[in-house]
Length: 506
Image: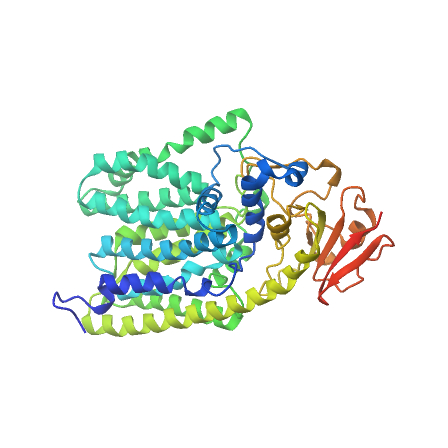
């Protein structure tokens, strides 16, 4: 069916709005989005807001606001918390991320193709790709904004309003960088690729196209000034993780994990679906690729291959960029046959509905799992110092129970000390001042891996025997049987059979 203008139903603004709204559905039921790192981030945001009025938090933490490239949700959530309760504000801010992601993708597709092709819908479920499930919310927000910025970049370029674009994208680049530096870098790749394609379409050769695109992207480099100043002052983030360059085994796992959530068969079938769409587009003469989006997708793929896992104090750098490349590749496809477009539109809608239904069911179950663990917080006194030890599997399990940073919610609800916070120079404004808790002061000290893969984190038996008793009032073991913490000065005060809260008897 087409409307009076000859556009398919999938190309209407009403349907685009419907897709944006549908993208929020998996997050509506859970009281808190069940993302791995989110409770830890919430702890940091609460500290930033409550520190001036909480003597308990003041004993444990310091928070020094600074211009760092990792502040997207750190700014958004406290702003919303002036209007809503803190945990509601967090939920609303997280819901905005997939909605902005889908809106940006559809907008970019419209600017590149002149209309939204049905194949663009196959990219919608990737708003819940593994980096988002991991809880990389600052990056995910920056990526969503980057897709919206890409659409505006293509639009102004097509209209030949290059001076206006240069002026507008100085502050836009700064916003992306402040939200998260990797999101800013991702946008730089996408903008450069789109401009190379635009200049090439005017008849210029490849060398001239790259030079002209580089000149057009100069305004995007303004944040480099802050990065150079931070490096000169010694406030920059950590260096490269050289051991993780070109690790093809790990990179293969990242690609297989694009949809990774709970059910491996379901996630891999979803991946096969989008790979099938790309393969069909490459083989079919009735489907074409827009170079305005296809070239940025290729640049993202190249960056995924080249980048290491660790860079500038951040982890999983290459993994974060893989879904963006896939999303761009999918929205770059445009069928040229009307009948084929209708068929693809129906298949894409079915894929979106099935995948988002699976995400919704998974999130409902994860929320229930997390709430069972969080019942321990009721028994933690306000201002307590809690040593958290969370059982982590080796990398063999497809699903993740997402308990690593659950103790961060004890900070939110009880103003406690928790040893799961991040304190990376140049990445967080949070500083830990509770020196007597050393060496159990920060992430990954809460993580306990089996001995066969325990290259980071804590050893359970050693920690229980040696942790500084003067520093901690409670021990919270997650994923260990009651009584696993064998020490004469630990008393069980709560357990659900899988996790246990102990009081340190002095």
